[in-house]
Length: 320
Ligand SMILES: Cc1ncc(C[n+]2csc(CCOP(=O)(O)OP(=O)(O)O)c2C)c(N)n1
Ligand SMILES: [Mg+2]
Image 1 (tube, rainbow, N blue to C red):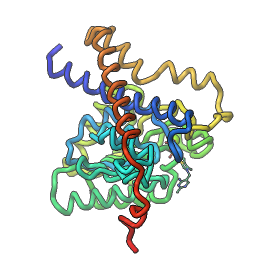
Image 2 (cartoon, rainbow, N blue to C red; image 1 turned 180 degrees about the vertical axis):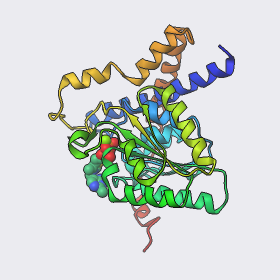
Image 3 (cartoon, rainbow, N blue to C red; image 1 turned 120 degrees about the horizontal axis):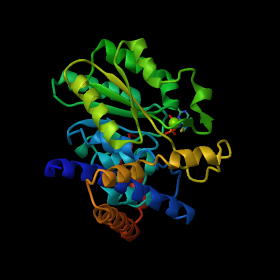
């Protein structure tokens, strides 16, 4: 295999590993009571953020969700500042006052995570409009869930983006659940991508647990959006391995269902392919993982070593 190809594959695996390590640390720290606030984890969905963002430049813009750590990491967010934010420390992205769901970093094109389900979708329409208005060659990527695709703002935004031909890729992470409700109970379509027909835009589907499939399909979608062919809806089929938020007992789904999806884990998927096709030796993949574990451990030490915000900080960054 050519060296650039190998480098690209390694980078995809690396991104998924950093996300997984960050999230597994989140599981551990929440269980120990170290992190205040809710934590919605992305375990099992890493291939989507890694695959999509590998096609983006730093200047391209993304909107994220309440389950946003993966998007932020894949778009170049700083894990030290993310971890500090989760700890509520002053060195965090929001000075420790926003927590997991409000991280934003315009320097690397992260317009913001969002605790409002579907809240990023109309924002992405504004981002897309701005790109077109400024005649810039950026693209906007909007991540959201299956549940969010039932929000009014989803339909209004796709309609508007379609008539204005905006350069937006809507990436629906269909992880099968909106909190405890299986998607078959909250929407009457088998494929969310079919909703693209209503707005006369392309609807595409990819295997959200296969980083190479995500990369390929999202690259096509981004090319369409950038070439002035308007918005695209890309549905990534995946599964939320953890509960809705940490502490969720998940009594609404069977262990068997979870096990079936665990067998399709995106990191294991990649490893299997990489070894069978001899892209990498096992030790190379292990070394990537070990480096990610160390990176996240450093982030935890950075957060622990940081101070809490001062009481006066309460009045900073408010309108009145
Ligand atoms: C406007 C709004 N309604 C309801 C909620 C409560 N809520 C938080 S997450 C969630 C489910 C979202 O499901 P989905 O869009 O599929 O995202 P996922 O959690 O599966 O990633 C709901 C209803 C909210 N935060 N915002
Ligand atoms: Mg969902």
